[in-house]
Image (cartoon, rainbow, N blue to C red; front, side):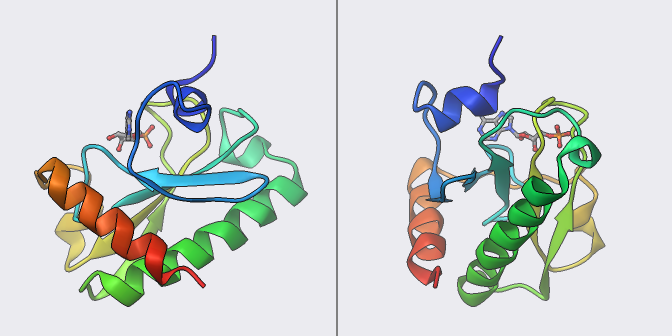
Length: 130
Ligand code: AMP
């Protein structure tokens, strides 16, 4: 069965899209640790980060770097943190999280955003992509 992220990539489930290229897709996390929390996902469905072949891994990191730079350009934060967890969704994804403090990195603290706020920050980040 396709993962929920494959369904998002295929347009079967809605998302607040940020960007895509031939191999990777980025969208806002629906239950964010902070405004602008973004997931970068390889289109090829693989469960674990370290099982990606080297080329796919490097492409995902390069894609995540670009998206992270765009987040830093438009979301006020100390820096953008990167985590790979994968305990909930078995399809590799890089969390890019705007950090004000350690609290935003813990996955215990969550921020609620309205649909308009999600739309606006998604537009700002995708507009800042080089
Ligand atoms: P983990 O697998 O533990 O790295 O966490 C999966 C992440 O995916 C969580 O932060 C969820 O909020 C996020 N997530 C799950 N379903 C969706 C969805 N439909 N759209 C956006 N983010 C999602």
